[in-house]
Amino acid sequence: MTLGQLRLFAGHAAVALLVALSAGAALAQSDDIKLGEFIAESPPQPAPAISFTDMAGHAVSLADFKGSATLVNLWATWCQPCLKEMPSLIRFQVKEGTALKVIALSEDIGGGDKVKAFVDKHDLGKLPIYLDPKSAALHAFELRGLPTSVLVGKDGKVLGKIEGEADWDSDKIAAAIKPLLPPN
Image (cartoon, rainbow, N blue to C red):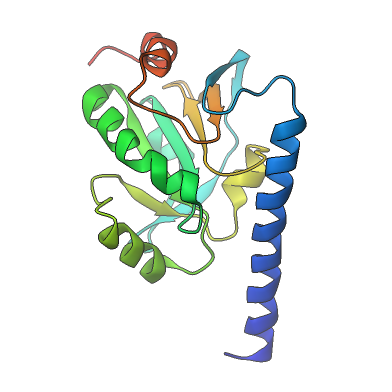
């Protein structure tokens, strides 16, 4: 690794640590955020234009999913609450079928090989995994930490979000999100 690469890696690692630490403090101080609960966006706002890559390295944008309700789940391999919610997120995706597309967007800076090894180790292959190593989505959505899931309607507008670990099997989340999805 060159000195420049090492500095870039250290910079990304420091940013990731600061995001994680500040997110916990910001969320703990916020009166309007209920961790793990769906908070509707009122009125819905246009989703930011974000780009990322699939696991094969092909460029993808959020606009590519317009016309489908899309759940953008931002996570990282080092985030324990992210890992904890993943099995229920997989079940939620399966249950909702074609009514909802899930984008599991890794915020890891380690690259696709690291994420793939993690996905394989934890049997998360049923989720469509995408990569955002520069945390562009985290910044564009103005999010405070991981995990966070953002629901985007088929018209490309943000319908709401869940900050913190979610129990995707819960009746409360289903009751909040199901009416916003098109029929299967």
